[in-house]
Image (cartoon, rainbow, N blue to C red; front, side, top):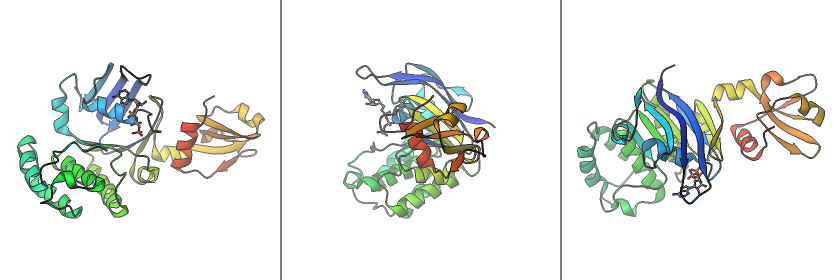
Length: 282
Ligand SMILES: Nc1ncnc2c1ncn2[C@@H]1O[C@H](COP(=O)(O)OP(=O)(O)OP(=O)(O)O)[C@@H](O)[C@H]1O
């Protein structure tokens, strides 16, 4: 399995905050969509900002297509399309004028593709961008990010604020984007149903630490949620658990389930997220 982006031991702290990213390490294989899940303030935007060089990292290495990105984030920016929840495009321009500027900035700018996205998202070409609604701005950022032929798309809460048909379009675009296995997506979202639909890998972060990084298929097939008694609980090594009155709700590898005494519960990615974020670890 070859890797598009490899992040190793990424650490980042802020001068006026107790928060720290703690040795964040992960890889993004070619052709994959990685869903990045965590509570507010868990460290998703910090991780993404440190990767693209918007934030200074304390330590750690970032390797894109085998090339160490050490200070020279320009090399990375060419190959990475970014959509953050706050838009950073010039508000006084119209789409028409913006595309003329972008043509000069990006060597691989694809005007035909950009026009297609603008039509698909029904965005007005002659209205100033500053007057766009939040959803329209996100759609425009997405169109820009996709049209300079990036290898990696980094999307921070990009589907939040989109109407259902816009979200449907974006999810479809992302699935198509990775289909030929030469590109990948890192996507953070609180809408776990979106992630459940399209992600190949799920990466959970809590208090600046990656607590689980697993393929979606493995998560759904090789793990289980059970409800059990204290005696049964003491025999297992859970990933996470929550005490519910006298019983325990436990997230464990499926191998540990003793089918004669333990009952598997149906679970969704939302359930797992809640157990990982609110639950305890043994
Ligand atoms: N510029 C900053 N200065 C100080 N602390 C910051 C700064 N930016 C973020 N933080 C802190 O870093 C922590 C992680 O924030 P971050 O934005 O990475 O979380 P997140 O997982 O993206 O959250 P959300 O889901 O709310 O977007 C928070 O405690 C936040 O207060």
